Image (tube, rainbow, N blue to C red; front, top):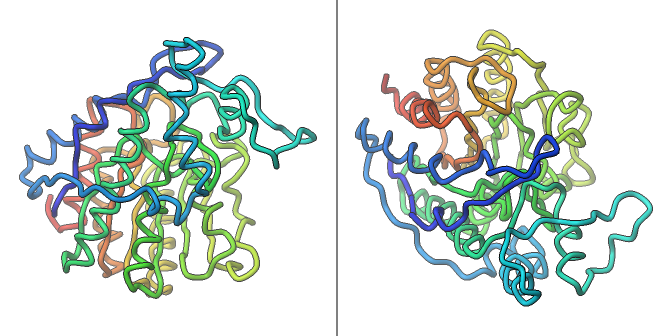
Length: 343
């Protein structure tokens, strides 16, 4: 299996406001480097650099003004003499207006963010756009005839919607890749999200569409981030009704519960008969993950890969979450090895 990787991810290393404290993000450069080292250690396959794509490709799922904001935000922040990470100050909640983009950077940051886990630094835009290019390159690899590929994306993407960033995510790499699959001739695409946290951004982007099936297994939003999407009754809207399926699972879920839910989710994906499958690969379902609450063992990730392989279609794995750095490489690559029938 080809892995698409770039060192540009190291340009983004930010802080977050968590538990009332400003601290370094759990989403740190060592995550991707640890996974890459494991890819090479097990001989998974060649590691290739991404192609460079025009930002108009990102605007196939995001708004043009949002993409422009991401590109220009650090410059606007620096014009005010600010050297530290840019974080939101205010959010347009409930009865505040959210239809007019503010002109001031403090307003823009709140307008386009859902939380305080998406700081912008000097290197953020280059890292973010390269991460999206990894996913686009991975889809191009499938279009060239490969049956599978791994986009080692960082920053991750599945919490980013058409016009907002959140949960360490800026551009939605999986959604951008799924749209690229459609643009390349696929009639039906499926996105299977196995990150511990619900892929609210991906759901939002495709919620009213019938050309992309979105299926997610995740921590119950009544207990877990992102709290405000991911319930079982969210099944799509308009043309997309019936094309969105959530499997919210309780804290402490182990392989017995997770494996059964995954098998059902994969049956649902297979019934959709997608021309291509995009897997939002999060391994924060691991028992030792510091910000998640499932109880999967490293061996269970081999089973995850094998179960997904049973769907039987070209598959692009797009890296999302997973924050126990000592084990993230083993767990992520176990999914890929399980998919390929390797132990």
